[in-house]
Image 1 (tube, protein in one colour):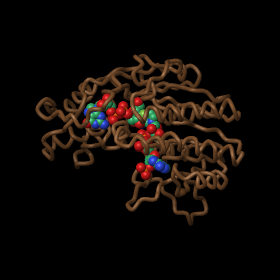
Image 2: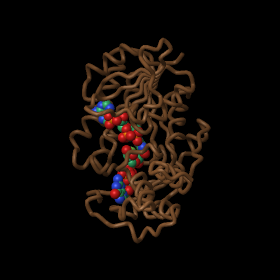
Image 3: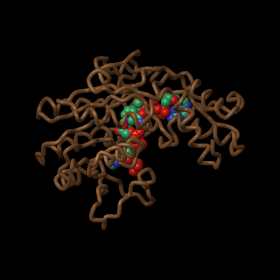
Image 4: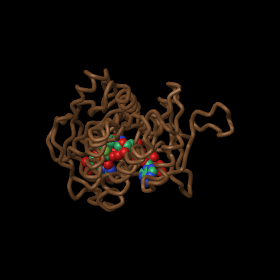
Length: 327
Ligand code: NAP
Ligand code: G4F
């Protein structure tokens, strides 16, 4: 039985990856943060009682800012595969908290890599790199596109990217950078734009709210479906050698188009319900991200299946179900 360690198991991707790995027969160990309220809602359905002899999902307290804990965790679990997904992952928030973002998203990666090196285990390491690293470089973006981050988050992720590459080159670690373009789902955090809009469309259609306040509607993103992307992460760690791969749909959608997809799905006129709030603008914006995932298709047999309009419908339907409407 293979053993995996997932940081960020309570996040969107962590929850889908846990489902995938448990389904493949893995023993899964997840790192969770101590919180005064439960933060395990996304993995509640996967929870296993620690008293069960056959337990294959084990949760451990830990934090990316706590190096010694990362060392003890790696020593205790001795995973065959490490999926490093934990991060302060919100771009807008990273402008308010650049130091915290650097400490967790950037240095947290160095702490984890160093823990693996110090303990000396033979493991495969997945780094959750991001299309946000491309920033101002125009699309299409692939593994050979130069980086130009436009946020403290993007800069922190770029540091993590180069640290993973350096541990591959300097220490021979099987380290992979998954450069993932935006991927969404009904489990997406409520303040990311796709979920915020899907949720608003459903609630407005049910008369629970009147307006949604948004920032830049002109930004272009390449939105795919998260469960397909975690399959790509797993495939990267099954390759013959550590390498870097882009995962994306290759399609361009503006925030305005996403708004239209969601509101049309509930037969509402978005122009009557969407209002502008400059508080949602970023000091520096990433205008357009459109990925070229041909390397992942060629080498891993991975290809995105769900395209943005269908994804918008999946997310709105989930929100409708949440407010008691089934379709
Ligand atoms: P997410 O939903 O925001 O989840 C982030 C996870 O990190 C949560 O489990 C969170 O724990 C944990 N975390 C945050 N700070 C931590 C700390 N100091 N110590 C330990 N854990 C900490 O993110 P996601 O969408 O699943 O994305 C997964 C990873 O992929 C992230 O690194 C993200 O930056 C990267 N990424 C995401 C996308 C995307 O479109 N989704 C694209 C490219 C790259 P709590 O639940 O306690 O907050
Ligand atoms: O949904 P977003 O906050 O995602 P963003 O900034 O693209 O970052 C996400 O994708 C990255 C991959 O490229 C990940 F690495 C990162 O962790 C995260 O998952 O914003 C998307 C776009 C932006 O251009 C933003 O300016 O939507 C625009 N937007 C317009 N109004 C808004 C809003 N974004 C948010 N969050 N809230 C708004 O009201």
